[in-house]
Image (cartoon, rainbow, N blue to C red; front, side, top):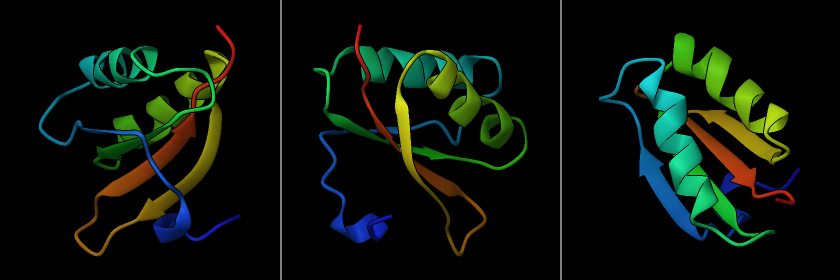
Length: 84
């Protein structure tokens, strides 16, 4: 997998100040605004968002390209929009 800095993203959403289950809703709305093949970066906390958002993105037919932990304990999820 490519280094996260090398992956070009088309959109960004920060869900660190949101609680589940709204975290996935915000990420889903953000990716729905993209075209197929475009890439979304989701900035999120660990715990429930970390467990639920990547799994839910896959279930929705999107491709998780990368998940990285940041020094502050947050995570960045890189997702490519799949077919409608």
